Image 1 (cartoon, helix red, strand yellow):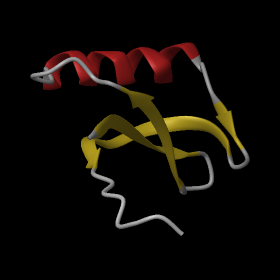
Image 2 (cartoon, helix red, strand yellow):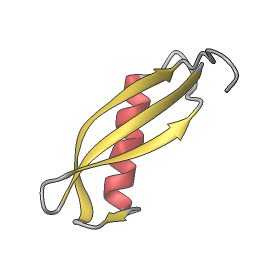
Image 3 (cartoon, helix red, strand yellow):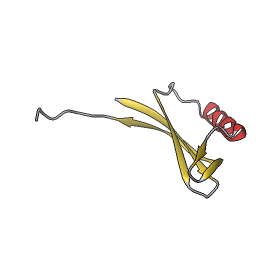
Image 4 (cartoon, one colour):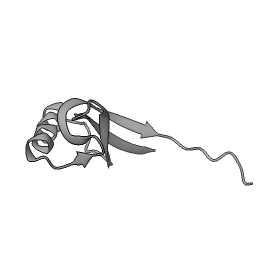
Length: 72
């Protein structure tokens, strides 16, 4: 099982931009996630094809399970 936390922002042209980080600390503290997202916005830390990140959309933890079925 591989887990990631995805931080989702809007950029200057209104498109969603996702920043994905592996192995989040659990349980996830939503207040800390929100604070980190605020810092990313305040610092202008990332620029996308559609410009700077301008607002928070949300965050989510994604878990991926892979089961090998057989040898090919």
